[in-house]
Length: 194
Image 1: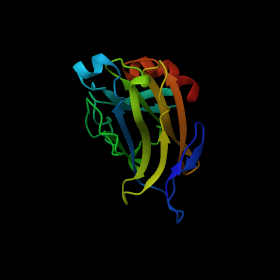
Image 2 (image 1 turned 120 degrees about the horizontal axis):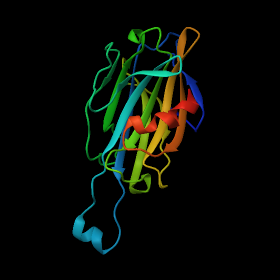
Image 3 (image 1 turned 30 degrees about the vertical axis):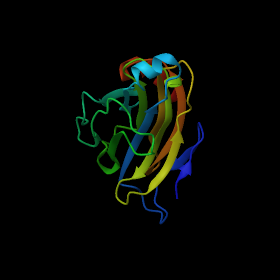
Image 4 (image 1 turned 180 degrees about the vertical axis):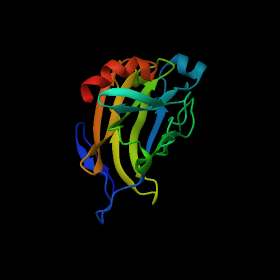
């Protein structure tokens, strides 16, 4: 059963039988909001290029990043499935995914922060049906879903993070609006959430 997360809410990343998850997928989906008025009829719906990124953190410092130009972390534990330049039909499918093999994440990496940014610079007022979700990659079961709040003049969002706690991992929905076209632009906005 999937949990709809609220901003700041945390969930433990363990299976219902108490065993730890070994592989998760953070999925991102979106659709361009329909344009209104005379120009919309002339120009069509328009495409929005949102990009999902995963920043690997060790001791409060970024050590690696997975995004559309670096699809696999240096250690191979985190993998981006590829860049989607337009978004989907808003039907709930993942337009971009980042796979995390939790068992292979190096011991010094204590957090992985997931971000989304509008590479083409459109604001979230121009996006609808945007979400991120966490899926147990072994079973395909959706564990949690976080609806990215629409509207606003921001071009990015610090979506969520997974972090080590004791012997396991937890996910925290962050949902913090930010401004930037790339993950590098978002590093100052990520820092308060580490």
